[in-house]
Amino acid sequence: MKILVTGGSGFIGSAFIRYLMTHTEHVVINLDKLTYAANDACSVYEVNSRRYRFYQKDLTNLSAITQVIESEEPDRIINFAAETHVDRSIHGPNAFFQSNIVGTYNLLQASLAYWQGLPSASQSGFRFHQVSTDEVYGELTDEFESPFTESSPIKPSSPYSASKASADNLVQAWGKTYGMPTLITRSSNNYGPWQYMEKLIPVVINCIVKQEPIPIYGKGDQQRNWLHVDDHVSALYCVLTQGDVGEIYNIGSEDELKNIDLVQCVCRISASLLNTEVDDVLKLITYVEDRQGHDFRYALSSKKIKNELGWEPSISFDAGLAQTIEWYLTYYDER
Ligand SMILES: NC(=O)c1ccc[n+]([C@@H]2O[C@H](COP(=O)([O-])OP(=O)(O)OC[C@H]3O[C@@H](n4cnc5c(N)ncnc54)[C@H](O)[C@@H]3O)[C@@H](O)[C@H]2O)c1
Image 1 (spheres, rainbow, N blue to C red):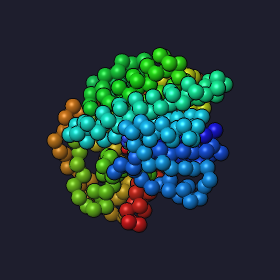
Image 2: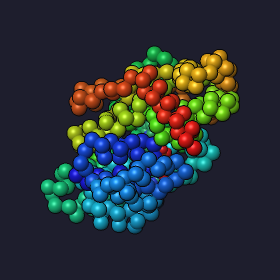
Image 3: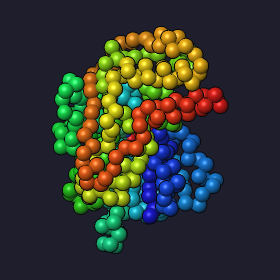
Image 4: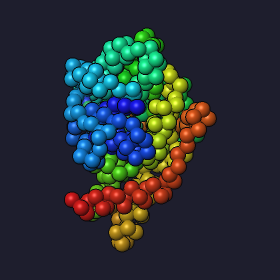
């Protein structure tokens, strides 16, 4: 197969490309604007592999992405490309609406025109897969509420999650109205190597390395479900190749932690890897003013993907977190 990956230079997109290059024989086309959040993890394939091609394009440019799709003729399109940082969306929502809503709309339009021109056998094999987030469901307000299922109502809280929810609605409408085969996945918070420095876990590690205050929003009692990025991408491949057309699949783990507990875990593991006193690291934790509209809790039920497609996460939180921290410490050391 030929798989077009948009946003393949970001944190999760690059992990997905690594998965495809390592575990499959598919041809991979990476289309990415290369915003500040992009990394160069996949540049190795540009020189080393004939089954990887990169296009620096912006989803807001319809003619540019139409050209790539028409010339490459992909069997599958998976859309990771997005602006993703909630804090940035609060202070500057426009970029989020451009990339996440207009960008997805353009990608749908370009995909639809291409898909309509395919012979019917290829039409039924084609998939448009939208990579979405648990944040579209909004927040759970206490610790005892049941996790979100795929039929929970969409109630986004931030400009970021509103833009992702809008994109999900567009994808569903294009599936229903035009019959284009679509899939949507909604994952919980990811952690792992190559995440941009502004996200919680890299921020904490960076502060520990530099011995600077570790900022925690509010009381740090917000709860999140954490999933290793390699588990996320194996789930994405499973849905992309076996998911039922038109369906939504949640992708999460059992690992639910308060932010403060997560930060303390990162402090303890980092202290042991750096051979420093845990108490000296823990005392860097500094409580700062809470984020506006900060969701209290996200938790996902992943029963559907488990029961219908047989996918389960395989990386334990303790092992995954330790491996992630080691990766960042080496990465900072080398730069
Ligand atoms: N990180 C998480 O924990 C998480 C959880 C659930 C879902 N998601 C979703 O997964 C996807 C990938 O997230 P991520 O954390 O890898 O994001 P990221 O910010 O690390 O990477 C996003 C990538 O998209 C590219 N991009 C942005 N705007 C673009 C545009 N207009 N045209 C082309 N490329 C553009 C960027 O250059 C970057 O390479 C996003 O859609 C996000 O909503 C992320």
